[in-house]
Amino acid sequence: MKPLEIRNLTIHYAVRGKWVEVVSGVDLDIDEKGEILAVVGESGCGKTTLGLAIAGLLPPNAKISSGSIKIFGKDVRSNFAKVAMIFQDALASLNPLLTIGEQIAEVYVHHFSMSKKEALEEAKKRLVEVGLPASYIDKYPHELSGGQRQRVLIAIAIAMNPELIIADEPTTALDVTTQAKVLKLLRSIVKSRGIPMVYITHDLALVAHIADKVAVMYAGQVVEYRDKYSLYKEPLHPYTQALLNSLPRVDLDLEELKVLKGEPPTPGSFPRGCRFNPRCSKAFSKCFIEEPPVKIFNNGFVRCHLYE
Ligand SMILES: Nc1ncnc2c1ncn2[C@@H]1O[C@H](COP(=O)(O)OP(=O)(O)O)[C@@H](O)[C@H]1O
Ligand code: SF4
Ligand SMILES: [Mg+2]
Picture 1 (tube, protein in one colour):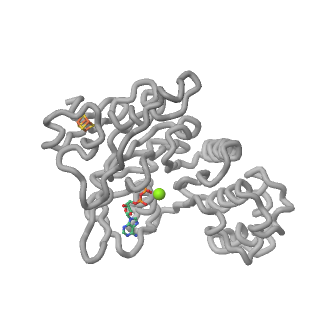
Picture 2 (spheres, rainbow, N blue to C red):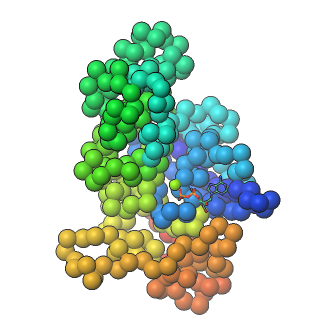
Picture 3 (tube, rainbow, N blue to C red):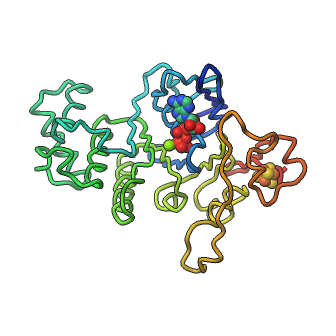
């Protein structure tokens, strides 16, 4: 059974008494243990909503209006899957009044019925696994740097022994050097433990370092889904091409950098036809009338009229 199988997933939020569609007909898979799927797209395109749905943590005003999410064959709505979520804001995710050791140990006490003493011993091992000294069990969150706190969140996530990890922009608040270190750690841990992971980010540059395959989201839809190497070598969707073109590159002058103009549409007012049409340099008449169908390739798919 696949670690993750999402089929035709559509999610609405109730906003001022109306249902607004924020995730539309998403199909995604993780095929093997330890595989890392990156979900990338601009802010507001529905990445966090998708992540929360996979973790079974959607807020009360959200509903899954169609489709399914299965983790190793179990529907997430049955609550039997063990999913750990790592968020961007480590300070908000940690309890300021408890030591790091107590917070990791809590997982062992709750999920594995260990004694406090045994649990603290396990907590030390997890700290070492994430590259922190075992002595940090006695420290409080405010005594750590941002990068160290993110490592603690990773320790808590793996303590659960999860079937799947969802990491939602876990390094966005960190400086570039620390970001790279935390990413490397996260990748090596999920690979060595064989934990499948969904890695959510707005930063396509980061994806190159962490992902095995990539889903590019735009206005609630997955517009391109490929393995990482094919995506970087030959991006198919005009949105992916625009995102890649706007990445800083050493071989280009600043003037040559093409910044993607305009804003993504807001849920509730997606344009007719292709949702990317107001910003697309390759748009033609059909793009303003018909929604592009999904064109399947052997290593993924693209949603664009250019590839019919
Ligand atoms: N609890 C909520 N209620 C209503 N709308 C929401 C809620 N959470 C997010 N949204 C809206 O849903 C859209 C997608 O948000 P989100 O999933 O956070 O996107 P991303 O993570 O890609 O930035 C946005 O327009 C956002 O304003
Ligand atoms: S369907 Fe048309 S508007 Fe949409 S991305 Fe393709 S070419 Fe651009
Ligand atoms: Mg988000």
